[in-house]
Length: 82
Length: 410
Picture 1 (cartoon, one colour):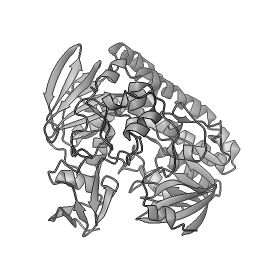
Picture 2 (cartoon, rainbow over the protein chains, first blue to last red):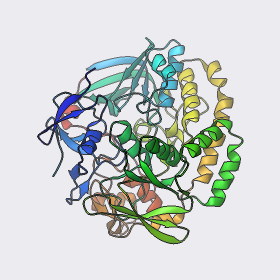
Picture 3 (cartoon, rainbow over the protein chains, first blue to last red):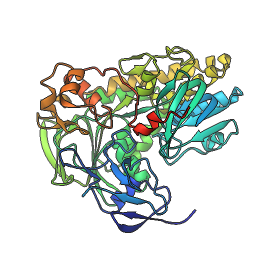
């Protein structure tokens, strides 16, 4: 298994340890905002187990992906809201 | 794609693993499905005990991760989605071990980034979120708070305080009762030892979280006084809520939020069993024994199942103790103001909801509970705040692309 997995977060090249979820790498990057709610409030994950859907981001072009349930993969493109 | 299996187990937490193992010991081929990237459920997230690591490698057991069960395709087969591909899995018997989730109660500021569930923050950290040196307040109710606080502290967090809403008198009674549960008592002592120096406040709860774009401080109510604490994270959960959606769409009877089962752990649908937290919150030991009973019963080994009835009864005693100790106080229902958002998916504030008479009425008029979580977070909150019981669940029980529903894989 590789030591680190390269992926991109909002266009920035980053590395994640194997077994890291996308949600955790977003927090590691220093970001706190995952998405804007329907009334534009800042939101981030809540339940950490795929139930609340608050940690939704776009992964490899697929919107509404639950970042807490998906492990980082080599070359993955992750996009949060601004 | 259509596949067949003998016994399907949904959920790979303690109940699901025990069920799969017991069923495989009865000579059955078992397929376990789980929505998470690895087996273990919440309690063994990123840390499956070695004995279960071995057992899951048994040739008669096939474990599949990252599989969302969307609902029934038709009686006797499930529609599942994995990696954006749908498939149908037909089964002879099913054992539902869908576990539980945290109960979240709304208070002003609870939607701010860095406000997590208690188990929620623990899961994030287990999967690599940095916590060293971060200031964390752990709050809510139940033994999970201690486990989470101890874990975060051990990982380098500065746990500023544990706020437990239960009254000190009731907690003292709980401690006394623990002497009849040696294993639980040992766990409690280990946790308290690990948490030396961390204030544990009973009769204490979060009134509000504040911050601009993220959490900056929480306001605690303790002993009739308000106190503000600056912190980086809040880990807050008010106990657990059984996850009963799959059982409900499979036609199993659900009563007062729990899946109804007989002594074989069989639901009201023949050949569909249910074990663990989805039949009532009782902790890992009860989940293991219920899972084993379900697995043996589904595998046709009623004698081996029956031999476990006594252990189940003993583990049930602890469940009743938990229930009576960590009952939520009424004051928690009045923390949210009319402006506080109750439904986080659709941003519906409490004030908009309380104009309506029932959950269904409020749903139709405000869209509360109709976002991607399908009421999993706001439903239990509305039940506690407004006294509205949850209503019927409809498939698909997880959001799914229309293409998966249209392109019938059969």
